[in-house]
Image (cartoon, rainbow, N blue to C red; front, side, top):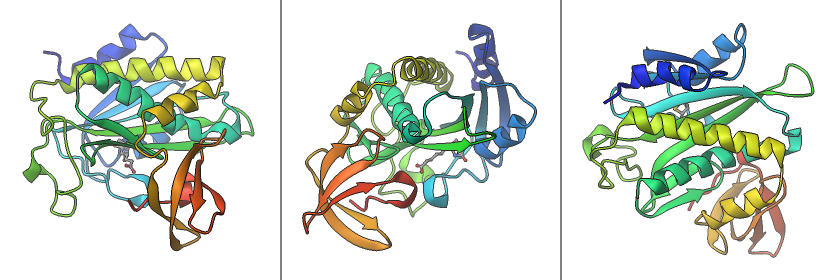
Length: 260
Ligand code: BTN
């Protein structure tokens, strides 16, 4: 079986335009990728076996123990228009879900904006950050964390009841290296498709794979907790919600949290 290190390095032979980097241990692949971006051509990929400061959305921590999960950041520049950048983390989630569907992982659903859940627990998360040198073609840092071999005891007490892994879902023999290859190839195809045809069909595909359409949710809005019913995604990838007072609100990933 290929090791995570060998497979990461081999990916740059398979995909000639992609430079790849591997570390046994990093603070965060997002942080390292931003340092490397100062002198590197894109696209490139940063993979680590473990992270000491793995980070999620809204500055949350991402637990990243050695040998158990998949942690990477893919860096690319994109021509996707600025207002459609939220599509990128949706696209990453969709690509990941479609790869894991082929591995028969049960009950997978996307949770807006950037989570992949199974049986109601978090299996993976994505973090897409954009850096604009100029108005056009921003650099995208697409980070992905996937829980692969973790047993219940490998999660901290704080997230033990909310997190799951492929192992806990019954996939004991999956290999991180081959999953990495499948996920990267799929994401690269999806990026190309999005750029060639920035079509809203993609958003309908995402809605179909998500758990939220028509559901009642709690969310934070301007610092307050509210409740409402999910109507879908708008053309920019924001979540359209009808509040209890019949207001139509569009949740933006950067400042909204779904509570349930
Ligand atoms: C989230 O659920 O809020 C997003 C989690 C993203 C975690 C990944 S792990 C690889 C990359 N490096 C980081 O520090 N974060 C992302």
